[in-house]
Image 1: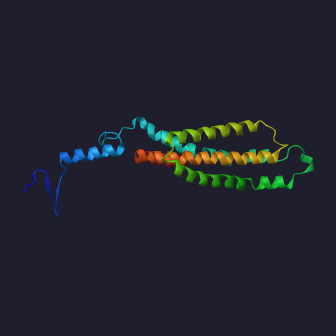
Image 2: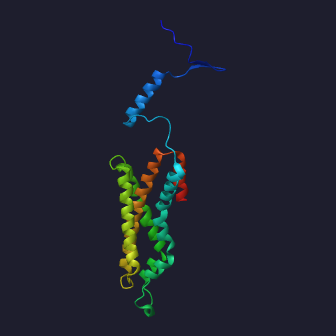
Length: 206
């Protein structure tokens, strides 16, 4: 019968415990290396010099809600673009007035429904598409939609108000979907970083 050495045995007020041996620590590091598919670098985490990672995640949080804020806060712009400017003396079409009065409601529906659908889609694609592909693709789609909306600023839409409304709702649905993919991907990415970076991301979204 073999007896363990008393060198690594410690006594407390109500228990006796043994510190892990070097052999046990080596086994744990080997197991960690297998789980991570690369050798364990140790317990030291990289230093965030000049708070660079914190600032980046804060900016990513700001960018997550920026498209929605652009659409919601431009009330005067939508009121101008959705009114019939071609014949102001003849009055306004009741259907156009309905579009103008309930535009924010249409915008909310066009934002919420695609967000829910693409949130589920992102959950299904999380192990099939790499996170940097999802982030870059969503940013590219958002940029393309903003280019379209900027071009429409200089276009006279008074003769096709309903068409402009439909195009705007479609753009809102697309940009809301891409924002959902972007936000959920970035939130998942913060799990590989210290908790303070997740706090920076949340602070940016608020």
